[in-house]
Length: 186
Image (cartoon, rainbow, N blue to C red; front, side):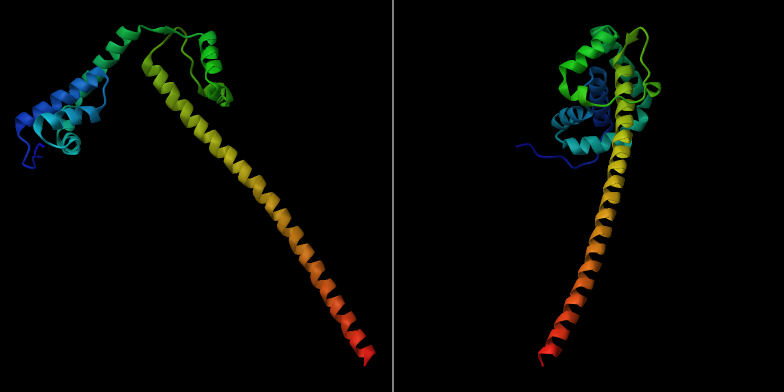
């Protein structure tokens, strides 16, 4: 069992942390896995590494982070090349995944479709925008459903109130009939 260090961070440890995190960014890995790797190397917890990165180191390396992200996207472009976007591909994907076929499409003016090539960055941007649009649609649909349910419940409440009123009148009439019957029997 290794002991977990709790002493102050040295400049060398900060450099190791930055180097590993930037490498993970370039490779397309997560920062969490970078923090775990650094934690093992420096005998610190991954949480401590993450806290150090976010509180002190990340600000110093913003330009290096941007460069690493560019290198990552260039690497992905080289690996994936580019995919020609066509209606046949999108329809095949939708038909192959039943959950996608059930989802209602957002209005077309809010969905930009690239003309010639499709990169991973544009796909991610498209999916984020699509997700936001569907969240708005779902919430509007839920509001409409709740409104109709509210109207229905109000109608039922009015009906129950009317029935209660009729029952109260019938009860009073029954009591008066019983009262007359008691008087006649005496």
